[in-house]
Length: 55
Image (cartoon, rainbow, N blue to C red):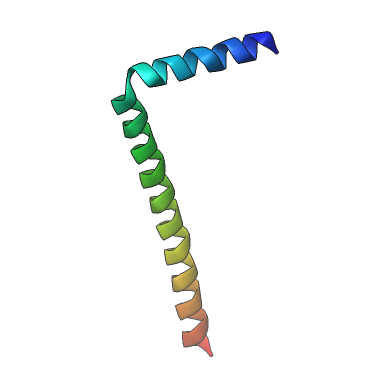
């Protein structure tokens, strides 16, 4: 547990020292999650359209 806390403290200290790096990773995370959301939406929309066309 102490090792985990020490590693977390080290990561937070590094993040505080380089906020641009943290911002870059946050933007990458939200960009990837947005792409994932759009992909899921698109698949659902295609499935909905194909089920509407077959009826």
